[in-house]
Length: 453
Image 1 (cartoon, rainbow, N blue to C red):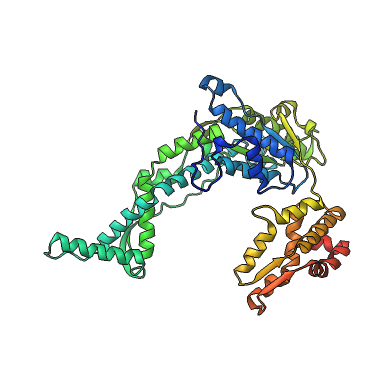
Image 2: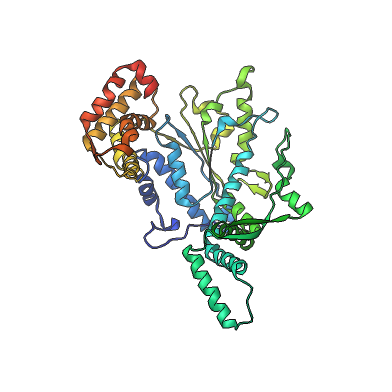
């Protein structure tokens, strides 16, 4: 089995197999503030995948991933950690809420659909990579086809002069001078959309009507006039589809899922709890029992073939306010051997979140205002004041963690965002006094802050 590692280019961070757990944590620090225990756990899990890759096949098959259970309130970075880890590893990644699933026999999504969704994501990933590789070749072939349509019927002239004319036309095409010219093209008709009402999942039956209809009746084409720019785009897509071997893409995508897939099971606490025999709780334990074989390793039938889940990494997360991890069925508890508790965020954490990450909220607002030609400056004192207000509102109402910063910042910059296109003064500096003026009254009035912040 092979784990596909991202290609390294000049100026990029080290290749995945060169990253030590400490360096993985350093990469995660660029986007997630605090939570060192959780970062250590996911860094070790990722490094173990690299170690497993270097083992002999017999031993590698025996080494199972150590699934992780993250326990912590909302808005502390659970989802972001898993998402950044998947991006770092270039792994197929799926985030799904455990509460969406229902026990077999109930109306709703069955748990195997998460693996089918993960395969779809992996196929899109691999296909996009192939598209990048063949983009230039496809564009050249499309341009050649378009030139064949644009070239006037060659007179009895020499082949050399004909080639010169073609090259001049190619230059005009590349420079965009022919974009508005109309050209007639053979376009494939789309197959009619058929909606099938069925209680089962069509993936289980293995029927794909979109692929079946053209195979039955053959693709139909019709003449259509379109702009040269649109024709070039259409022909490029056609050439890309011809150049990509979808069978090979599918094989590689399934192998990536089996060896490197990551599933983030959010809200696992919502299905915790033993059966009470009545009401909505009746299927909670059933969902857990359905999730169990997927997590411990089984074979799922998808429309692309069978997929083994033995080496997919599962990261479960939940707040566990009402229930606790021990309320999960014992078999499922045993499948998440690594447990990490994430701490609630403090004022200092909020200040760091606003300043440090690559995608920090303050940097996002500065960039947004730059598009309007406004130079927005958020002073350190202003960011500290925003962090204090966020912490205060979290204490007095529901604690939603770092998400509170979004509501506070939106309210703070509401007036500037609205007036930005018409503002004559193009330099705006936000200080603590401005923050206090905009937010003090709302935060003071608890009834109002519950609705606005």
